[in-house]
Image (tube, rainbow, N blue to C red; front, side, top):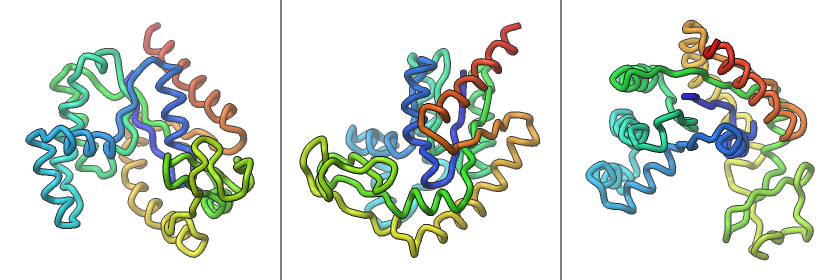
Length: 221
């Protein structure tokens, strides 16, 4: 299956992407990971991206699209993939559709994890990250065994500036404004599946997997 996963900050999108990767047997593709990999490898696209990053500028849509197009042509994507963080704009969505058409494929589903604003604020406001290994904790949902200390590597836990309560609402408003057109785009094409993102991680995973397996069964019948 060829899937796009979207969700606001705090929805647990990254965690769900890793679960789905294992459950569905398809690679998770993160644009952030692609950029870092290309820069480390010194590829032509990586060098172009590095030039923008060195100037503190956003990497252009077309360059990100080229990285994704290159990635989904690799052998491990032959039976599908899970895109995390792409597309973010209508232009990117059109480019993805065109690239898949070249490969005689199409997108199967866009999964949107939906969580009420109040709960997102609560989740993000209590999130802490390990400075050393980047493991994530939450004051309520996933507290460390020792306050301020990572269970995995004993590193120091800190709260990112964009996770502090005074900035969370602003982040969510930006997400809603920027993502609304994309969700409408996929809804009009009958590709959007909105999943309740409240409850335990396993419960949300089960909702997503059940929806996708039903969709796959319908497509195969």
